[in-house]
Image (cartoon, rainbow, N blue to C red; front, side, top):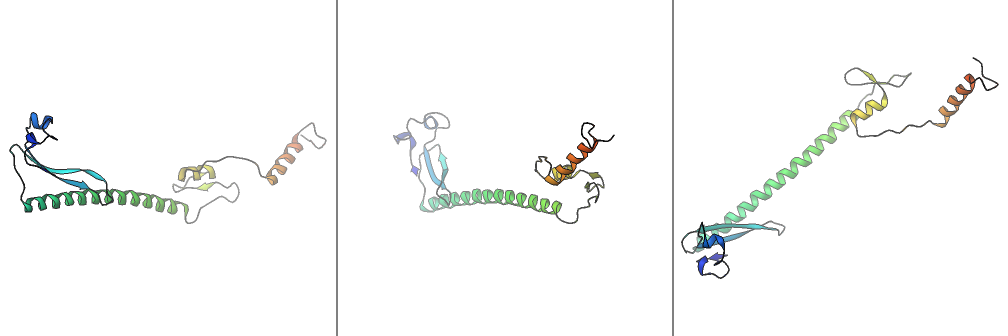
Length: 161
């Protein structure tokens, strides 16, 4: 878009940038349109005196607008790449944490962590993931716990203290 004299153009004559500082008289703009069709704005040239652009100047303005879009799209792609790279690094870190041998006590089932400390399984997993735990008793353990309770309950026939 080229406006040779903004004060005489009805679209711009009332604009404060024309009637007040900076008193724009000449305007030439090239659209900033992304490769997927989104219009971001314009790259423009302004002057305080009426004017026009040569064909070469118009070609240069359009070339600059394409360069601006190329730089913006490159920046967006770089940000997306960095985001995906961070996600990949986090995933690899999680895989490394969960791979390899896991030292576990054969008797009480506590686990030795990277610092050599023996910790409960729930704490070990909780420190390395976002897993949440609920607790219950499996049928085999339930029978064993109930028999132990009955063994020491003085109200049962079997109870011996």
